[in-house]
Image (cartoon, rainbow, N blue to C red; front, side):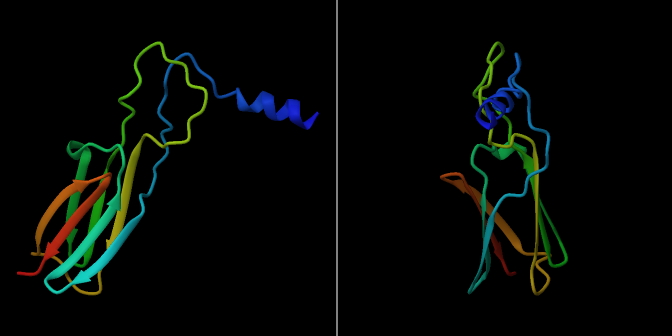
Length: 119
């Protein structure tokens, strides 16, 4: 009985159209202090650079954006969806102000690397 109920719920999510999950997600991040400031690595596989916002205020770094499912087209039916395609946010607090720091960022193998360099 339990097996047949599990099988029933496994396919309840199937749809004729691809839908975004719609829930907010919080990417993982690593923060390193360097001799000239900070290095922040944020795990953002599948996110386009155009869909990322970076803001600094006081001692807070705010990163937000959207991961979109661009690999699927119309007429596709999903069987299983575990990756979150929606808006994300990450707020990191530093022990001192980072306002006015030089910000350099780039992508490397699905990681957003942000260098905050002291002036």
